[in-house]
Length: 429
Image 1 (cartoon, rainbow, N blue to C red):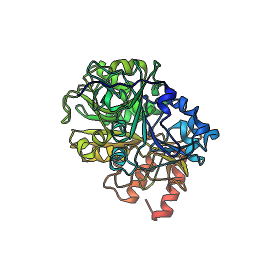
Image 2 (spheres, one colour):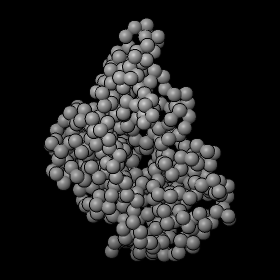
Image 3 (cartoon, helix red, strand yellow):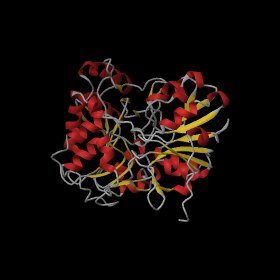
Image 4 (cartoon, rainbow, N blue to C red):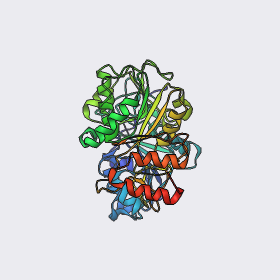
C-alpha cells in the first residue's frame, strides 16, 4: 500500500458531508458508532430524508426518535430493540433479506450507499485499522460507499481476518476513546432455558461444528457443553459462552474442514473480558457474512449443529422468528442460512429451540401462525424442534405426524386444545 494519508477531523467536520436524501450505512453490533450517531442528531434541523441502513445496533439511537422523523428514516436489515418503534411506527421500515446476501445488496448497487459510518481500531504501523467486533456486512459497506467516516477508538479490539481496512480506504477519521456496549445473555437464563439446553446438549456430538444464534437459549446450551470434546465453531455471532469453552479446552476446532484450529465468526457481542480475549487473537477469524453464512461453506464442515430460536411454530412446522403477528420484531438474519447448511452437513443437526409458552402463558406452538406473521424458516427446512418438554423430529414426517410430535412437546395446559384443532384439520392424529 502507498504512503499513509490519514485525515483526522472533528465529528462536526466529518459529518458535514452528509446531505438531505443520502443513504447512510451505520455499522452495528457492539461496534455501533454511538458517538458519531449522537453528533449526527445535532444536524437534524438542517437534514431531511436521510436514510439510515443497518443490521442490529446497540445503545441509544436518537435518530430513530419521533422528533427526528422528518430528518431520518430507519431502513433496517435486522430490527433491533432500539429501532423497533420507528420501524413499526412509520418512521422506518424493514427490508427482508438473508444475512448472507446483504453484502451483495451493497456490491451490486441494488442498495447503493452514499456514506458509511464505521468504528475501527487505531491504525497499525502499516496503516491498517480493524473493523474489530463487527466485520459481517460492514466490510462490503466500506468498499461500496462513496464516502467513509470512521470513529477511531483504542478500546476497539484488533481482530484478524477480513476486517483489516487500510487507512487510505477511509475518507475521514474522528478520534474517540469510549467503552463498547456490553451484553450478557446468561443473565436472562431461567430454568426453562436450562432444561432446553440439557436436551440440546445430549444432541451435540463430540467433534461437532456449532452455530449459535443470539439469546438466552444459545448461551444456556454453551454452558451445558463443558463435558464435550473437540467442538468447533463456525457461526455468524460469537458470545461469552464460546470464550469460556475455549478456556476449558472443549472448543479446539480440530475437526473443521474450513479453517481448522480457528473460530470463524462474523460479529462478536459480549462483555469486556470477551473483547479483550479476541483482541489480536489469531484463534479468532472474523469473516464477511457472504462467506461465513454461505450454505456451501457451512455444509462443508462436519456435524454442523445449528441452534436458533423462534417466536412461534405452527403444527405443520412453519417457524416464525422475526415477527409477532404484524409487528416486526427482529429480522430473518442468518437462521435460514445455517438451518439449511446444517441439514446438508455430514451428520448435521438443524435445531429450532423455544420455550413452550410466552411469559403470559400463551402457547408458542400454535394450530396456525398469527395473522400477519411472517414465516422465517419453512416447514420443509425444519428438522428438530426443542422445548422444555422434549424434542420433536419433523424431518420426513407427514402433517399428522408433525402435529402429534409438536403437541407432545407443547405445554401440558395447551395440548388438549391443540389436539382438538389438529383433529378438526386432519380428521385424526
